[in-house]
Image (cartoon, rainbow, N blue to C red):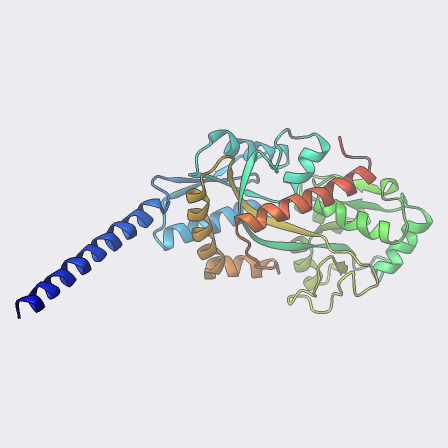
Length: 331
């Protein structure tokens, strides 16, 4: 009987020891998890109401609704987003995050920005992408993309085409890649630069330019209203909001050009900080707030973690550099 008591006592002590070790181990894991401990500053490179601003405020709304962290949106406009990206990088604090798009690549490749997207920031999460629309007024003689390209083949400078403020970026690549697919020298195109997509729309509808190559959210409402005709979208699939509009690939041109949205932080973030933001941003991407934002512009809601986004950055930078070199725009 005494031996049984000793055995039972020994087992109890061993079990207590295991539980204690498990408790310590769990505490260590919890201690390693990172979460914001002060106000998060969400830095965007556009003015209030712009694309990046809308993304930043959607993230802010989710952080508030789900009681993740207090946050503010900072609008650092200028330099094609370079001022905003530089601000995040210089702070060196994981409580500062930025909303980045394709201009992050083209600005560095062209020499407009010294910030290297492959070394000076930490890509945290890829949050989705939006295609480019090639659009004309409804009274334009060009009924499809092949007719417009046929005219450019005759005389590349015969049509004025706006790419907003995005010289060398995604908007520019949309029409440039189509021209290239047709065997046209894209450097000879008459590209018009404005302050942004809204100015491109105003000038197209006003008859001051012939066409525009802009993110689809700028063109879709006007296509639906009957004041613009979208000739094709540079996406892999048709947009649900304009099912009558073909993709450029359907029209015979193997062109895909998407303007992505990525959340980034400063360089040299720790693995724990990166993992913490991945967890938060995954929740954002799955929230109804974010889903509704993506749907409002017919954008693709696609999530990638930090490692996947870093790999994407490297490939996209190379793609952008090759095209901009062909356009004579690389430094």
